[in-house]
Structure formats: structure tokens, C-alpha cells
Image (cartoon, helix red, strand yellow):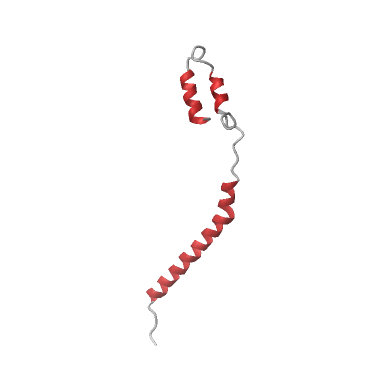
Amino acid sequence: MSEKSPIAHFVLFMICLAALGSILAGAHYLAVDLPAQQNVNTPENAGWGTTSCTQCKQDCGSSSTNTNYFNCLMTCRAVAC
């Protein structure tokens, strides 16, 4: 009976190690990473988190009273709308 070469044993070991690592990584993803991604809360200090688009535009005022009116509207569109 012929014996397997040392390189064949090494290749088999590496394949088993890779399979075990993949299984452990998948289990970690399902047990730790996925639940953490689903329970993301808005930070309390988020300035625009609860501001509606209409409220943001009202806060900008008008073009006659606010020199940065158009910049404010662009910010509202980018963040709140």
C-alpha cells in the first residue's frame, strides 16, 4: 500500500482548516454581527435625525431675511429631505 506524501497531508490539513474557519466566521456573523446591525439606533446628538423636510425649510426663513437661505435649502435637501 502506498503512503500519501507529506505535501498531500499538508494540503488536506489546510483545506480542513479553511473549512473550519469559514464555519466559525459564519457562526460569529450570525450570532454577533447580524444582531448588532439590526439594532442600530439614531444617536441622541444627531441634529437632523428627527427634523422633517418641511420643518427644515421653515427654519431657513426666507431669502429676504436670511443671506444664506439657498445654502440652507441645499443643506435641508441633502440631510432631511
